[in-house]
Length: 104
Image 1: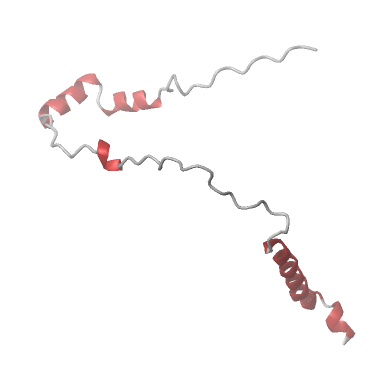
Image 2: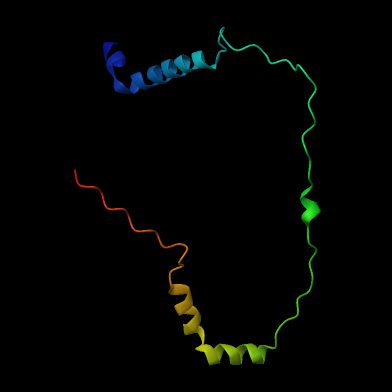
């Protein structure tokens, strides 16, 4: 019988139960809570704006001639020009150099 109480396998359920029982204390409301707020004067209702107020319906865009688009791509260097452009760092995203620390 003493082996059961000293077994680590038997202690885990007891530890879990005590932990859950202790956490239930924090779920109770305290006596010193703030009183409920009462409205002293009527206020204006919150402003409402629909997301559909600024909705722009779909419009069909004029597409370019595919032959002209292919010729333009070939003239500027093909896909490599787009890859080079994508590989260049964005000047707005380049971090500023760190300030040098003052010597004591």
